[in-house]
Image 1 (cartoon, rainbow, N blue to C red):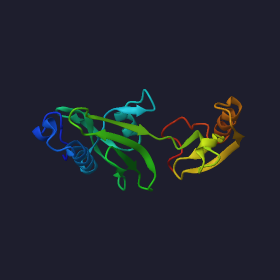
Image 2: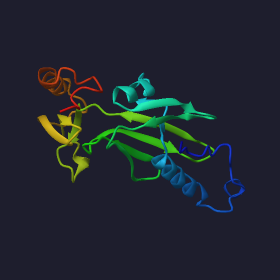
Image 3: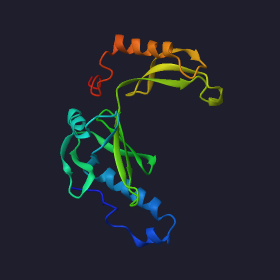
Image 4: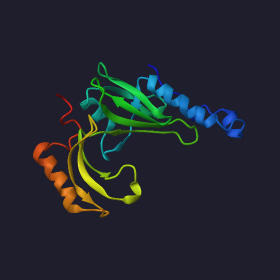
Length: 194
């Protein structure tokens, strides 16, 4: 099985003595490449809280194996046909993409030997969120509450604009929309199948 290198167990003197100021950045970039090309995903879930990552992977159709020997940050996995892992232009963040090109989870891996960490954030299909009314001028703080389809990044419902820091009434409008149209929206696995 292709695995990532446990950098904690193999520190390079160049990193420890400051001989190359870019060594840590290079280690993080190499760690990302290894993870993308490995048969592994993070074993810990960061969001939503309280989710068992291995159990959620299985619900998504991902076959999971035991943790990697000597490296509890990862689980061995077999992705469903057409699924892939892809980097997003940052040395620590990546996407887990399904066979329809939709981002089903994001995952983080910091390969730096002194602060090595990995976790996954699973995505719900429909979410309530807030958006700035004027994307070009966020200093304005005017915003609206909305419901987004995370498969398409499309706003499917939005409220009036407010300048309040928090507006329970507008947030409730989004929740009411979700409950009427997508009552299982809090289930990570709901609404992803056509």
